[in-house]
Amino acid sequence: MFSKLSKKTLIKASLFKNNPVYVQFYITARCNLTCEQCNIIYANSDVRECTLDEIKIIADNMAEMGVAIVLLTGGEPFARKDLPEIIYAFESRGVHVRMQTNGFASEEQIIKSIEAGGKDISISLDSLTPVSQDKINGGFNDSWHQALKTMSLFTKHLPKNDSFASLGCVFQPYNLSDIENVIKFGTAASWYTSLVPVHVTDNVHPTGFRTFDSDLKFKSEEIERAYELIERVRVMRKEGFLLYDSDQYLDDIKKFINNEDITWRNKNNGVCDSPNLYFAVLPNGEFSPCCDFRVDNSYPLYSDNFIDNFNSKKFKNEVYDVTSSCDGCMYGSYPEITISMRFLAAKIQRAKTFFDPRKQSKNWPLSYEDLLSIAEKIQKNNVVKIKSRKRKKIFKLA
Amino acid sequence: MAKKIKLESFIYHLLLKGTKRKFINKNNPKFIWLDFIDLLDFQYDSGFCIIVNKKDKSVQAKIKLSEYIHCLKGDNLDSTKNKSHEYQFYPNDPVKSKNDIFIQSVIKDIANKNNFFEGNSNV
Image (cartoon, rainbow over all chains, first blue to last red; front, top):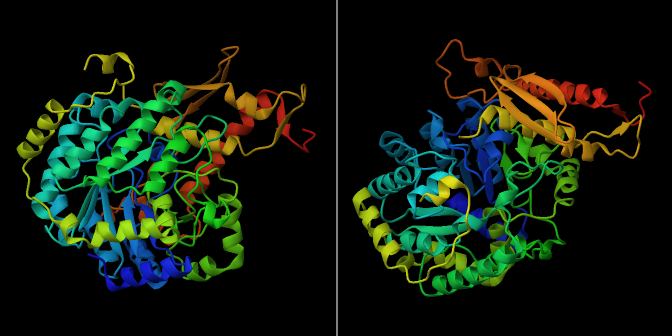
């Protein structure tokens, strides 16, 4: 699935920890959902979007830097009409594209994106209960069904071999009773699940991705239940369920939701690996250390001197000023890449994910009705019942 | 009701830029600028953002959201009316700059109205 360029970078980064393996490119801030746990559509909508001509130069620069994986994210990336051309711009230069959608991509868009070289997809799914998912997505009816329809389309059009599909599931107080079911559902459909704990902030500490909704914070009485859940999903992964997350990452989720110091940055003096192993790009093409913070100066990735700037001491110091004052995050990919590159056990686990043929075999295609049936069976047979947090009126009606 | 995306974006950038400013209260130096920001509440009313002091319910500002540029598209180059085309390859994003100037002026107005001024300012 990975190009020669991507494989070469992964090996070099693993050895020297100074090759940008992974870039999150926020190609748009436009989105047709307003998910409760996400702030990025608001944070990134103050800038213009890059044009395709600029993105081609960004792809040139990323290929020259040896970027292994670019996540095309948003907003809703499929809101951009030129997404297939964007995918082609990266894939044709050897930069592996991970596509992402909230589930509202049309069949025509999906076909064109796969034809353009996209073979790695992540879809947001936080619950197997439609009304819960719709509520989490900001009160949009049918978003759960739409996500399943989109999953079905990807199983129809992606190649069975040489492709990767995952569900992004936000670990939050309101869906604790749903997470095991999402993992079971994903496994039954040959999709991995990746957990990201909800990130909450307040008016005096605004950051790009973190929600201001204090209601989403874990309460002390919920922590124990969340810990037990983490241990159960860890066991599920050992039993063969397709959970993407490493042991250390799961341990750090526990610490993070309880406001304890996380450990994944410990081998780098308590600082993350931005920009050496990963960074983000704003919709206007400017560099940013991650989804939460920006740097004061503007460094567009389409500029002729971006790579020189990137390698300069001044630039690295400017980023370090930001990263060294951050308390840390648990945004899935950033910690997981540091963990994969710096911890041997996680490296082996990750290699198995992508190169073990048994874990790559898929029961595709699956129709929307197939997926509905799988979801219903899992819901009915769910032996482990966890009491979910009571919440607003619309939720109680479920 | 789904959140108003433009309103939420405006609020986020006002908070982000506001919390980076170093204002001092001329009448009461013990009144910290960040504590004042924490008192602000934001409401939507027909295309305007009404900024209210949660404590005394006073209206601090009424901001016309259409003055804030939001999500300028980059994927419709065929359109002759496309504004993003003219901004192509700019070293600095003019949309970001305009929004920054607009929001900084809102912050300054609210601050000054409540006797907050820049640290070394005699104004």
